[in-house]
Length: 343
Image (tube, rainbow, N blue to C red; front, side, top):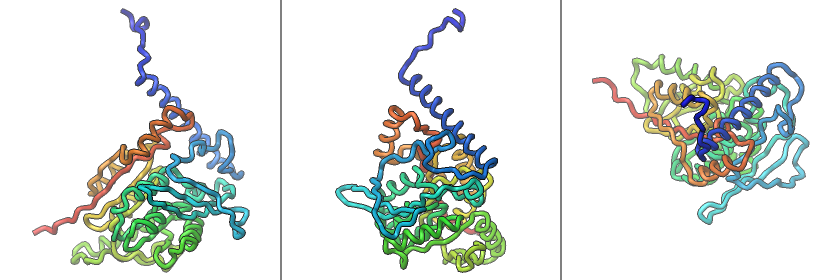
């Protein structure tokens, strides 16, 4: 029988695969349009525009309830929102300041400012995951890298997961200024430290410090790095962190090795880094490979929470805008084992 005469059975699996592929192609086309706009146009790009440039057609897994707060202190470019959830009959809530302004291409490209545009699904899922697994951060030193405009995961961990202390960071000054407002609004200014951290500078300082002490006895209190931020001379991260959080920070290939080095340099022995991001083609895979090569024990988990997984399956069936490759976050657990000195 010739190949052209063979009938292709339309099984549920085939139908689901074709639907997923169509969504992936559509979503990737929108990302290409956005990339073209960012590199070739100086016109403002609205984050709410209902056109092909916007990739915010899928915005949330609806894990947290979001309510706009009326506040006379609001300015035209921002607004306050309450993010809340009830888990195991316990209420959780935090107030988040969201920026409403439109960003020019230069503002988005400058130093990655995309985190100021919105709370991305990966940050939402990581925040929800921490609320469901509060023991991860209990009595631990917690650091969030690349937290964007809200550092939602780090802020919720600080408020409800009983860490010993929390540092939240982003590479963009606008993001960190916004997070400082959020931390103050939620009454945690004396407990949560907000810093500007650019991975390239941090990684360079970590490599330099590591080389300098290569033949010296390792200090039990960790690695001290001074004056690497450029924008904030007070930005000195001392000691190491037991838990490092990172949501949707893997989409820049050129930053991959610096992010891996920053996590490795600041994670304590036997510490845990939770990296959550969608696959986005091969970007997730390449990061996981780079982390393993650096010396991490890497564990990739696709089904890490029952509710998030159920919501993912619902969206596959019901939403034309949802593309797993771009929207469903995979959890990567990175652990750093203590090295035994030779001899």
